[in-house]
Each structure stands twice: as C-alpha cells, then as structure tokens.
Image (cartoon, rainbow, N blue to C red; front, side, top):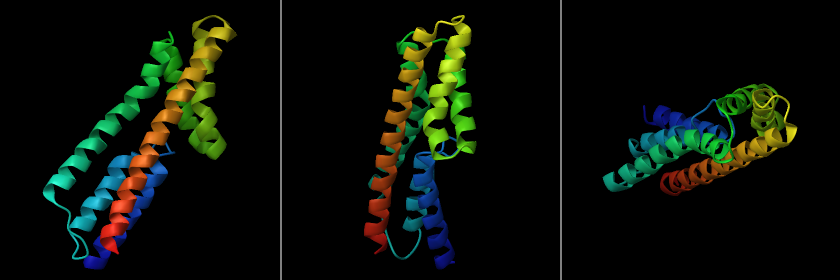
Length: 158
C-alpha cells in the first residue's frame, strides 16, 4: 500500500506540473494532492498548518487562474465573445501541441473580438494580446507553485 501511495503521489505531482501548461488539467490541485498523499506515507510528515496553508494557496491560485485571463480581456475592453474565443482557443490549442497551447488563446480571442467588433482588427489584436499576457501570467504562476510543491515533495521524500 505504501508503494502504491508513493507512486500515485508522484504521478499526481508530475501531472500537476504538466497541468501548468495544459488548460484541461488543474495543475496546482493535482500537485497539492500528490503532496497530501506523500503525507500519508511513512516517508514524510507535513504539519497540519503547512498542509492547510499550501491547500489554501492552491485554492486561491486555482480561482485566480480562471479569473485572470478573463479579467485581462475585460480590462482592455473585450467582449464575452473574445473571452469565449480565448477559452475555445486554449482548449483547441491542446490538440496542436506546445505551440497550439501558447498561441491558441491568442488566436481564439482575436477571432472572437474580430467577429464581435465587425472586422476591427486593431481592437481585436489589442484584446488578443491582453488574453495572451493573462495566459502567460497565469501559466507562470501555476508553474512556479507546482515546482515549489515538487521541491517540498522531494525534500520530504528523500
């Protein structure tokens, strides 16, 4: 049972790191779940305060992850169609590999805003860039947090 928990914890941690880039996977919650599973093995013991604080930070980051790209689009005057386009672009980008993951939200927001603003490509480009910046910030924050969780995991496990 001990080995199964450890293997599952490692899988969750790695999947969480991948989830920092892939919009279909909730990266930080998966990484935190891996850390929590490690706590239930004989190899590590985290304090309750540590688990609660990291869990709360993970929850806040997860909420911010969903809000930040939309907020960036709204802040620049984007429409709901631009927000939806960014989301569709992010999901479609997963199918196109790493470049699709990066460019998908940008292209989706551009198309959505282009349609919503009846061909105003300048406005659509500004909104798409805002969506892209929001995506990069969100991805960067998730990656840093998942790597921190991985550090604490490795520090305790070994």
